[in-house]
Length: 254
Image (cartoon, rainbow, N blue to C red; front, side):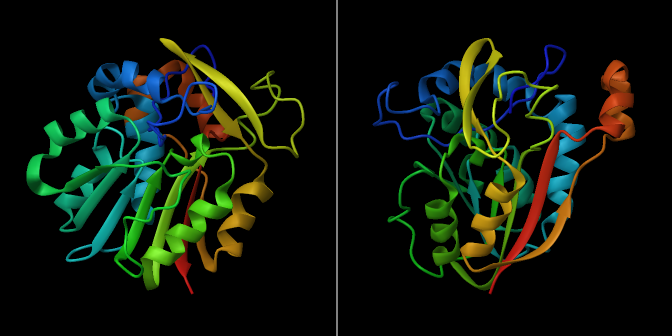
């Protein structure tokens, strides 16, 4: 998502390292450059740690002894948390530099693979996971039908999918004057040390691909900031308590 000038929202990336900059609007190179800063800030950044993470993690069911895919794992914040909850975790991400930080943070407590969420996940077996967490990663995938179909394929029956993404309201004027047509999927850019392209989309383009992939929606959360957020970003607390930034979804494979 594209934050306002007063925001610093850190977003994991899922990219294909074999694609060129021209072909790859999801900016692998940019996130390779951002990896060091991301790793240092993501666990304490107010928007991640005290707005998105509490809401997304609240949707994740008991994972003790479960096989969980952290899709778009970034530097391993969710991977580490899932391991601490007793899950057997595989983290995947397109950025080699982000993965290096994840491996450093998590070590051999989880497995990691470099992979592109925009491509078929052929290296993952059908019915091989009990759950998938995909936090702030799908903004870098234009078409969601394929990736959600792949998620459904690799999940066991009754398996859960928890995802978070930028809120469509927050990504459209007046908050974001780059966007032109609410009903279209549009490629925009955010500035955070480097220019990072991403896709904004309407509610329908978020929820319908989930339903079309044979998932049943369980719950939707539009997070509000915690008390810790207020201490970290008092100048933004009142607005973010009234205005959505993220959208978090839990669904179950039928």
